[in-house]
Image (tube, rainbow, N blue to C red; front, side):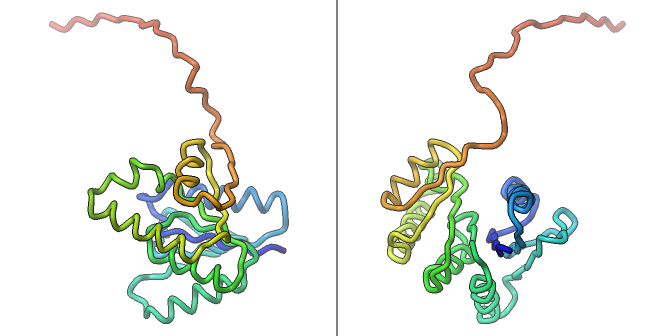
Length: 195
């Protein structure tokens, strides 16, 4: 049985698409191989996301002791066969990646579009500088160990721009839609008179 650890900042309405993807991936992987999934998060809205038999959710409240949180992250990484990191900028992502490198664990980083130019620059110049500083740190600790997951061509290009020597697994967006298909321009008019 494979132990898969997912790490995300939050399982909440704000982060609903990534949260839903994690549960979808967990169910999909379980249908293919025998696996057990754990999700580490710093914000869990229990009224939206519930544990099931094979998905255990560990809510690491920021208010907990920093050393206790470090121990929980480290222990869960040591007990995992594969670690899937969702995102880049939060402390939980950084600590997870650090412990994966230190423990020699197989891990994948899915930036979820966070390395696109528009995403890097969307909160002003100071945050843009901070994000580039974090990218520099990631390059130092990752070396050639990083494996990225991308779901669009644009995301693949942005990952190569910052982590050119890293392996990238391209998994096309699983939502079936065709942008080139045009909708009918036919409009049905109805006139309603009042008075």
